[in-house]
Image 1: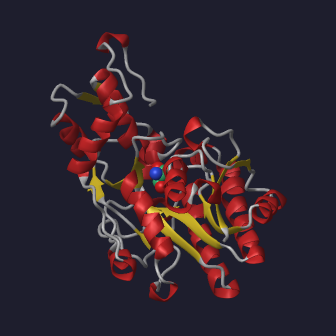
Image 2: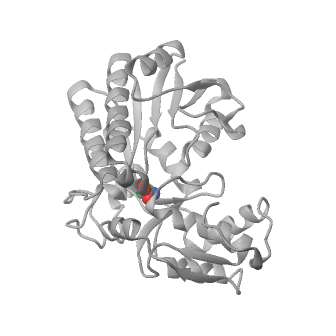
Length: 326
Ligand code: SER
């Protein structure tokens, strides 16, 4: 029986996808890999140090572990990518090309996470269709569109079973994101519990699609389970669970923490990125082609986040100040 490789396993998605895959397929069958050393959460099964810009390293891991499916999560997120566009091209594009090459050579299936970042200012902003204009103005978006196209090319040209999702901002109680534009929607929960106060870097009316991580993990598993013949699209499916603003999130948190306060100090880089993205995604093709349906809306996600984080965060006296990192 063939095994599974997850790249970027220490990241926000990998920290929850690896345990979900191990729960389903067995610990030894899921090889976590990352360029960084593993945190404890992923330390309960096989792990490989892997630089996904090295074809040889990917080939070695795939052959050594008899890999049949690769979940390629390693990437720089949008805000970091905008500060380091050259590195973002090397890491995001270099890795997806090389992973696809190894998938072709070794006959592996591939999951590739795309993003709402694959859209740009000329894309219809409301109910953004599955097939529409994709002219992103960020390096992150350029690498996501190119990655989608390359995955489709390898599927059509070489028969690689490559499938992908355009994730909205992902909200998780397990691992913090790193360097994304939508990170506020995670940080806000940590600061609400710790300090009853958050300083937000996006305007209160900045509307973006979001999703709670348990829905995102289920979406990955369900897409990879789907019968190939039912998929008219492959890379990548629009996906959403809620379309919300910072002000909406503040209102939902105040239902649980009435004294929660917010101030706004706009970061022009991340605000510009957010303004270039859609405000609500139409994910009807994912619903029709492989039965996608989210379980968590804003209210359910907020209740669960506060519940889970309250178990691991200790509230701090507000006079001790605030920080905007989980
Ligand atoms: N959450 C990602 C980011 O903000 C978007 O896919 O970069």
